[in-house]
Amino acid sequence: MPDQSIAKALELSATRCRQMDAPLVDRLKAFADDVAALSPEFAAIVERMIGVLRKAGVGEHAPQPGEPMPSFVLPDQDGHLVGLHDFLGKDQVVLSFHRGGWCPYCRINAEALARIEPEVRARRGRVVVITPDVEQFNAELRADTRATFPVLTDLDNAFAMELSLAFKVPEEKRQAMTSAGWDIASSQNSDAWILPIPATFVIGTDGIVKSRFLDPDYRKRMTTEDIVAALE
Amino acid sequence: MHQIRYFLAVGRTLNFTQAADECHVSQPSLSRAIIKLEEELGGDLFRRERGLTHLTDLGRMMQPLLQQTYDTATSAKTLASSYRKGGTAPLRLALSNTVDLRLLIEPLSSLIEGMPGLELKFFRGTAGQVAEQIKGGESELGIAGPLEADWERFKSWTLFHGTFHLLVHKSHRLASQKSIALKDLAGERLLGRPYCEVADRFAALLAANGIEQSSGDMLASDTDALELINANVGVGVMPATTRCGSNLSSIPIEGIDLDFPTLLYSVHGRQHSPAAAGLIQLVRAANWRQIIDSLKSVDAAAA
Image 1: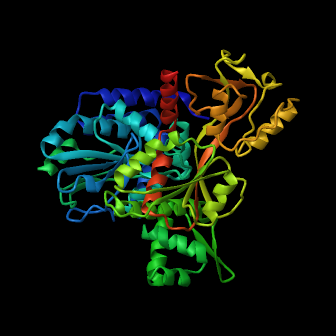
Image 2: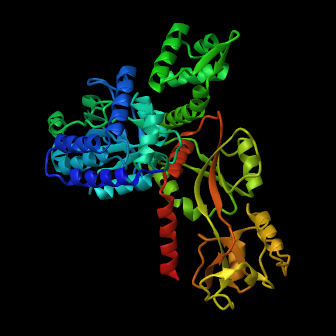
Image 3: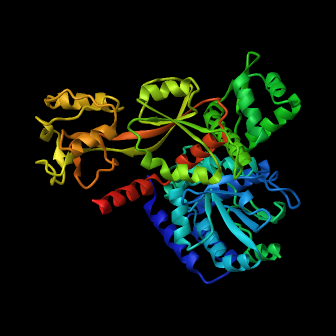
């Protein structure tokens, strides 16, 4: 049974944190603090999961600076195919793996990316967000955050898996998420309950990774300052 | 990804040595990778019993999920290799007679945009014929309602659900009704659509409601049915997304369940062409609600 009171409270907090006029890192922390205060139990489950992911080295084998980003071709929120090839030789790419529009941290992150888009473009860069959600939900995320960048569907988390970013959500976390109203099975149109750890790669026009940020702690994201700096 | 490949190999062969051979790695390497995967998943994937290797419950649960991810990843690499390049193999797609191509225009257009010069090789037939086409390898993919063929090698994904409406000429006595009940069909010239996946189910519904079909018309396509209804010859129970021109009315049918899914079919273990790989991605990810809604508004505007 979804815990309505906590789900509702988390929703309100998420909205508040999204609208905060503060740097990305502060907004993420504010929400994380609210979660811990509203449900220490949930926060403990999160910590346990992050611990397991760290120990298992999830993300360790993702492309490092100096390595090429593997090519991808994925559908955007409007059903058009978008590939790495479309940017090579023309624009740098800020490739950001998000869990999905349902995730409050991802919404805050996506909004921050939308805000820095002009700066990114001024440095010959383009933002591209990838989530395992199907187009309908990626379209909502994009509209909601007023982004103009494409949000791509990574079906079955296949590309995330290739980059060693994907993991299976542990049972206790799955139950906690479902109780809190976060049912990723319907947004991904899959029962697999697999998610990517959030990661951002800044890729040069030659397809080589210039900078990356990833963390099994999904509450942490690459700062907008670091993204812009990496584009120089 | 190699962890998954190794896991799938052991899951298939139930033999670590054989799996290592298949994957061209040493057994210790493979075992180490499996252990890492087990750490991440928080449990054992295999156990040994009387000298034989078995999948644990966790292993059995993860196998289809990881197989799906692996298959999609393989498919995606194929797609990426042909993206924006010419000279790719044609798309061989089998479509059931009940699938309106209007529904697929967006994904097909996106696919063609991404693969310049792509040729389309379509097959049209009943659901049964579509099944045979795919089994025999003449078509790589199929889009149809439920196939009766229970072939274990079929892979399918439900794309969207639809329902049926009654289509009548605008001068028909029922034309201006907001909805009809099944009994309103009594005595009507109901054009038979034996090629439809739901035909038997519908016939059973009519029989159960004591409605005898007043004519034995047997048509061969929805296009033909529409032409006849347009000429005020008969009425048709057809998919709700069917385009009806200004001469026709499309009326919901209350009180019965005529929900039917449209599915994408492919075959386990067969390598996809880049075009097939692309179409699979596009139709599985598509915003079907929006596609169907926009068709409805196009039709409403034209009416």
